[in-house]
Image 1: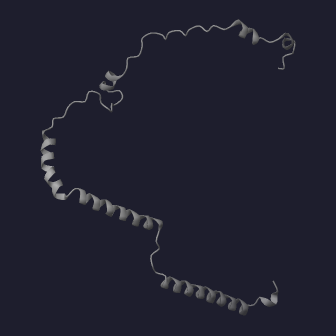
Image 2: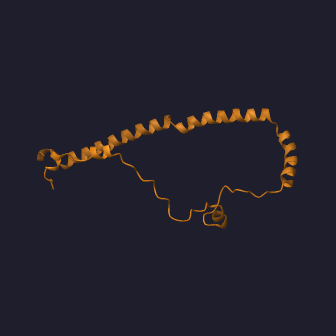
Image 3: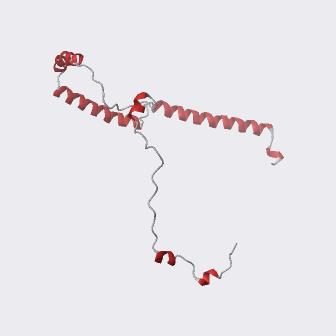
Length: 144
């Protein structure tokens, strides 16, 4: 750096130019922020509007198809029917705890004894002869 351009007065002026530039940008950002104060709309807000419209349509359709008075009138009769019903045992439970007596009782019995031997495979002699090496291949040395 040139020593004639490096002195305290130039450094002082450069400092204040930097502070002034920073303050100008700060004032610009403040002005923009003050005139643009509406909340940003996210994608979730846009989708929520459609959901609320759908919810309102469904609520309106349900209110038109079945009134609250009809529901209130049906509840006592249904409650008496459910209270009078006796629970019945389930013959084949859908959920069984492994290792429980019910699981042991429901498990299939494994076969006793060794498995049956497989049937012997019969190989055609022509196929056997086709797989044998020829005399010229026998003469080749082993490449190990």
